[in-house]
Amino acid sequence: MKTDKNERSEKGDKNRGTFPDAVPSPTERAEHLSTLKAWKMALDAHAFVRARCDLFYETLQGGLDDGVPGAAPIWISGDCHGENLGAVGSILAREGGTASFELNDFDETVLGWAAHDLLRLALDMTVAARSYEELRGVESVAIVASALEGYCEALSRSSPEKALALDAAPPQLRKLLRRTADQTQTDLLDRRVPRGADGRRRFAHGARYFPLADAERAAIDALVERDEVRRLIASMTDDAPDADVEVLDAAFRVAGTGSLGCFRAAALVRIGGKKKQRANEDDHLLRLVDIKEALPARAIRHPHAKTPSDDAERVVSGARALAPSVGERMIAATFLDRRVVVRELLPQDRKVTLELLKRGEAAPIARHLGAVVGRAHARQLAAPEAAAWSAQLLPGGTCDGCPPGWLWDSLIHLVGVHEAAYLRHCGALVEKYPHLR
Image (tube, rainbow, N blue to C red; front, side, top):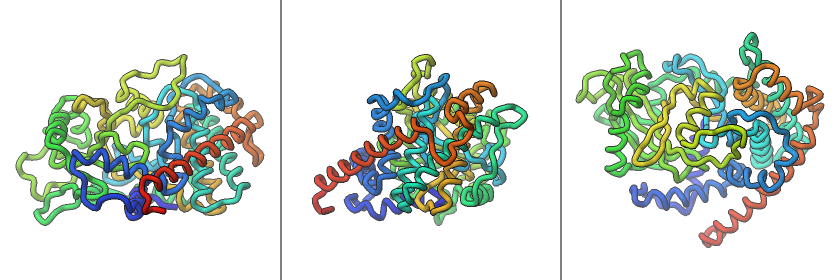
């Protein structure tokens, strides 16, 4: 099982074929990213499913949702697939130490129906297993059943005395946690902003980082100078909250698939210290900050709950409800007339990838990831509410090897819709680029 999403991104870059080798200028960026997204979505059905959150909800609203269990509205991920879960560091352990599995992407979060997260995760894992290892159909059944059982088991632990604890992760996921716990701030900086010959750290323009327009670079400086943003960044060290913060470098960041096309930047900042002394900066004063545009969610909002209309506030609110260790290092802000979320990147933050699922490994991993989602939901529920919701989903307390009809029947329909759309996408791509034939 791979433990770093960037490995897969590099694989995609090697196979993209139709893209120019040169790094796009800011004026060329939109067209480049549109082509990149289309090609990444064509790499395999799993990549397509992850990128088409909109198709998932369109299918639900087309009548499929009628048989899905409902409950009181809570914050949901909205885009609950495997790569939106992973190892997450704590702000108390920036120099190595602890990491836990949590939801880590909240672009689609809304106050909605918890079952939608379950369906999205089941779809993702089923297509991943069929895309990469061609697991037998009976193993797909086990994957879905295990994810639901793990979810319901986490709901049963919602009481304060159980502290929302989870069972030990399977070996493949424990390995990821061990690797991430050992990471330090210097490790993160070396991966993202290596030192040049002059001793200064800078983003290297290439497949992962593009140059910014002058106006964008100036706007990042201005963003960091705002009191609320500066205080968030200053809190990343032990310095006083009124410490100076300086942007040393910034670049447009290329990450993910579904979000390609929205504005996203990474900034290298220094907290405290004397300005103008930039050579050989001390790593303990440097932090990486992600600035990501908050776009309208495609997830279905519950009509009896008021999801914030401001998309950046929506993302931050959902993150703080679902994964406090992530939400506490986020803030909503405005950047060049865009609403954005500013977030600290930690060395322990690593996404899970499902490319190398093996027979015998998929069901235990699905069970644990289901439990992670269940814990995120249970954080918002009193113990009696969590127990009632679990009983509604799984009346007998176990799937007994077979997921309930509402989940399995919905999944079959969703897989069919997405597989057909994937083939249509590939056909359109070949038509646009005839040399791929």
